[in-house]
Length: 405
Image 1 (tube, rainbow, N blue to C red):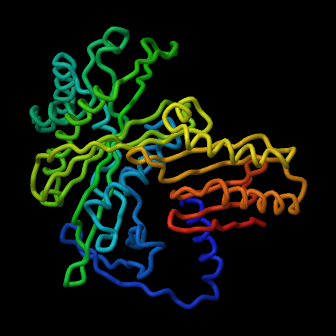
Image 2 (cartoon, rainbow, N blue to C red):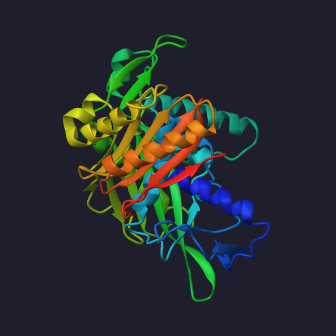
Image 3 (cartoon, helix red, strand yellow):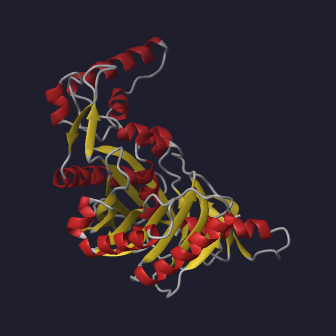
């Protein structure tokens, strides 16, 4: 669980001044025939996590995702979820993880744009060719037109037309790349896999005039999947033309965003795999996962038993603590089965003794009531500050408590 890992890492950092030097493997990274020495730590947080090559290299498109996805929880889930789905194809035991190094900011922004209509393309290509000629440059009109026509979202002739905006929404919000490397017998690490997430809208917000009101157009799952598959085919073909990506396996996963104000993130809906050297994706696989808010009508309708368990836990705590204001929960489901439950309990505390007493009681209630076979995390907060943390992995019987000082 993310918060647990953060605390664990912090503890390691605090101890690093007096701890013995951590074991690490020194490898040579072979990148486009240019060799550079890198470090791969010998230890990782768990068998489910990838080891990462150091020094850590941020994505070449770093920061783009923040501009493109309106819901902060979608940002986290796209990144973490793509890594989770990549494990089916790139085993953490034998692959190292690195953020995307092939799609840079300019490329991603260009691909996220709209295609141009014929008239728009003719006009812009003519203007660029004319400017180049005036400055004494050789003009390659075919390349100019190709560079201008990079957008993966549908073309629109008149953005001020509500009818055209409704008929041709922007489906694609973001493209996320992740890289997976392996160490060869010669000690060098080479790219051996690429994963791509296509973040697709569930709701298209648009304006027909600058500064005007926003309108909304909902996008069905079926429509989104059809558009996502078409975009995925184009993306794979483009990747195959890039230096270093001609022969590596490529995973593409389609992510459905939630609405901007949603308290839970969206989820992945489909994935497909292109074998080494192939410019075509194989059969699409459906992904049956979702995040569910507790309490909510959706939780009561679809996951009634789980909703009642969470309610029972909240009711038990409410009996003894007057400052209690409620429990907000988020369940993560795969194939209809809850895999992780995160609960947030906001309270007003008057001292550490009250924090300790509340945490002890919440621990007992969690042990007795929240006994399902899923990862559990309970965040106890005051004024948006974490006071204590209760967590349990799915394979453990008893939760663990941390009181934060």
